[in-house]
Image (cartoon, rainbow, N blue to C red; front, side, top):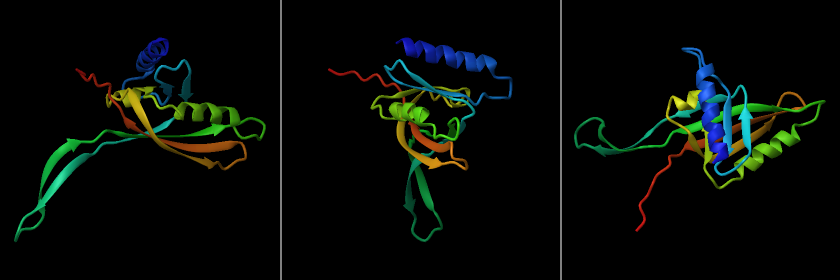
Length: 155
C-alpha cells in the first residue's frame, strides 16, 4: 500500500510538472505489493490500440461487412538505454530491471503520457536487450499490455 501511495504521489507530481502541451518522458514502474520502484528517465513510449473484428464476405459484392467484437487492450512499448560507468556494462541496473520484470504481479506505472490513455497498470509481455553502440550501454525494449483492476464477485 505504501508504494501505491508513492506511485499516486509521483503521478500527481509528474502531472503538475508538465507544461501545457508538453508531457514529461519519465516513467516509474513498480510491481504490485513491492517496495521497490524502477525509474526510467527519458523513456520513449509508444501505445497501440486495436479492435477484434469479424469480417463476413458478401456474395457478388466487393469487400466485406465488419462487426466490432471487442476493443483490445493497449499495447505499450517502452524503449531506453542502460548506461554503465567506466566502460562497464550496467550490471546493477540490468539486475534491478530483470527483478521487476520477473514478477507475476501487475506492474503499476506512473507516466503523464500513459495517464492520457487511462493506463496505470501493466502486464509484462516480453523484453529485448541489445548491446549498444558503446561498450558500457545496453539498449532495451519492454512490451506490456494495459491491465485493469476488475472487481469480480465470487459466490
